[in-house]
Image 1 (spheres, rainbow, N blue to C red):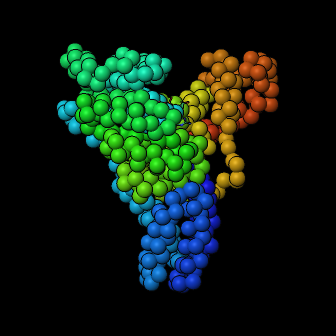
Image 2 (image 1 turned 30 degrees about the vertical axis):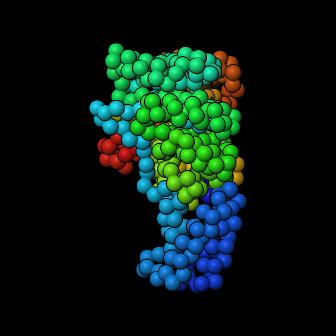
Image 3 (image 1 turned 135 degrees about the vertical axis):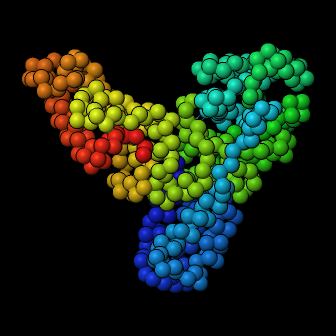
Length: 436
Ligand code: GDP
């Protein structure tokens, strides 16, 4: 996400140079380019104009502080304004401990409403909240079934409305269900249409009036660009929207909708959808995203992914006896954090250091996994015994060449050496992939 803008901005800002002063001409030329870059990323025209005006006003006459040169000063100004443009502080929907929390999910059909409902249930269940999902599309049984499937995957109860069921009946059935099985959070997945539709809006307004949601989350598809923001205005007029979930940012290199959303709609982005999977929902942190756009990396994001994937520290004592099972375990842990190419981008300075189109195939990890899985327990514990005939057997058993097995064993040897070195360097502290 945001690759278009990120690459452009980084090119532009690199050109500013390292002089100790910032000239007016330099500021003007840079701002013109930044405005173009924003427009190319499909940022709303007014928002782009505003952005550049604010940064210019601060850059012209800016006294360079002792430690920052011209380039660094402009980067800082652009970074801070990007954070503002993305909404400033991180915002999240209110969840009152021990209170009544009813979240209403609205949006056009196909925006990712049902998927996001499942993702939210999964996220908050992990935080120990008791969830009740309500499949409230009174016209499309298939939509209700879709939520039921997700609810089952997450392991939370779901209440399905009947065809044409009246809002008052839906409310009393929710109340009855909660009396039997209390929940900390009720998430209501409502009906969607392909376009803004007056009948639907009336229906949603009636249901909203009855259920009195504490949050109304509008799910918008980032890939639809500025149109997503028109949709937001239309929904806000009828069912007051409190925050946005911007989906499919994984497929949207430009990111114009996400970049303009706060300024155009006045609503915070609560979450970003970054994959089809249940785990693919991230809280939206303006400062971290600004950092990613400018290629500064997102160390906090990396740490959180590691925490979510439950990456465990390796026992310090084991570093010296790092065997193939340990290698496999660590690779599997990394895979749980998501595609490796995505992870690398979170490391400060790495997004620009990599060649264009660089990817590390997750397949490579799968291949290693297959080869180690084809070994006996004894071979994994003590790779030294893996001679020529065993190598051949492992290659055959895992569908690889002997050369691949050779490479794997060599890589393991090198990693083992590295582990030992790390252990010495950290003077007894755990040498591991843990985020500390
Ligand atoms: P709804 O009609 O608004 O309920 O939309 P769905 O939840 O059925 O989602 C429509 C399609 O978008 C499905 O194929 C989802 O898997 C996909 N989708 C939803 N959110 C995301 C996302 O953040 N990233 C990607 N890549 N796909 C998503």
